[in-house]
Length: 423
Image 1: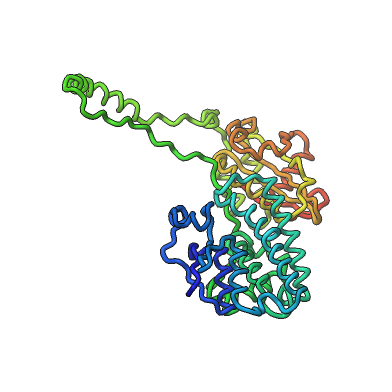
Image 2: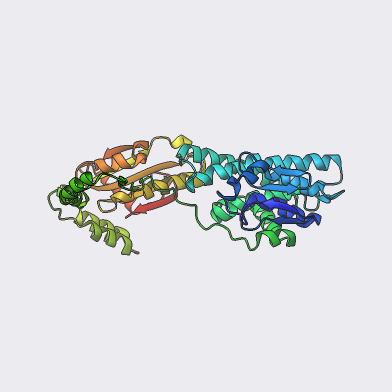
């Protein structure tokens, strides 16, 4: 009798048991037409797993839930299965790496990915901690794989199956090449594993994520208007009175539903400026050579000190910028959240330093003489920076503006790790 696995076809935790079955010659059948959120809420499913989580393995002796337990059950269904090694120390090391794959790899990938998928709030400090912990774990795994093809011994074990499924979750969703390139032995191990025939049969062709998922927008969904249900079986007199009131009600409803004019942004009410921001952005983008002579000179020719203001910003918590990828991602997130100001701003953000902690500094051009209030209110990153208005009477500050616009390197004596433009 085949064992029945209750889970969706793309569930990476279900893959553990299915791959173990391929290596063990055990028949495991994936239940048909499984629908997450429906099938796992039925009384029959809840009898197998009271909290409704997947996967669940249905066996002649009763159900087994938790993916690692399912993979262990499947592997032990075959006597003397090499997936469990040949000695007691092999068994201990296999269990060790299974726990490591769950607690250090899978847990930290999930803490980073799930909030970006909308399952929870994406908080920069929590994300940075998860990425740092994941990098530490991948570093340890990379060191082990420097002199080992597999985790334990010289052939695939259950530890490799579970580790590969957890890495697959990350590689396919959020671990880009720029991230994993720091761990070449992990990369070699992962691609070796996913191309094993028994693994490839379950996972299919694996493609690495090309970008990190964006942080979900905080903008609330529009709420549908409440509608009152019509009363039934009302007396005829009441119906007559209601009929008389209908024209007035309809009129009122039309007034309520009429779209209100969108309030103007305060910046649109400022006196006209001689500086056309789009002209500057176009000049910046199109200048490929002689940047100082063309773009920088053009900027000062266009600049209107009465209609615009320049601001330096410095990240307040540079001591936390110990991971290059995390630091650059932090700046990228800030620029994404500044999208609401695109019509009124231009910015340059520099990540500075050859070694951590890295410094983050920026230059911003805003419409008006102050940082727009709606930007301060809507973009929480603003409070993470110290802001200082540029004094154009100070030639040193003016030269600093020039250097930041053109990504001058070295900048203030240090190399640039990254430079991003908001335009």
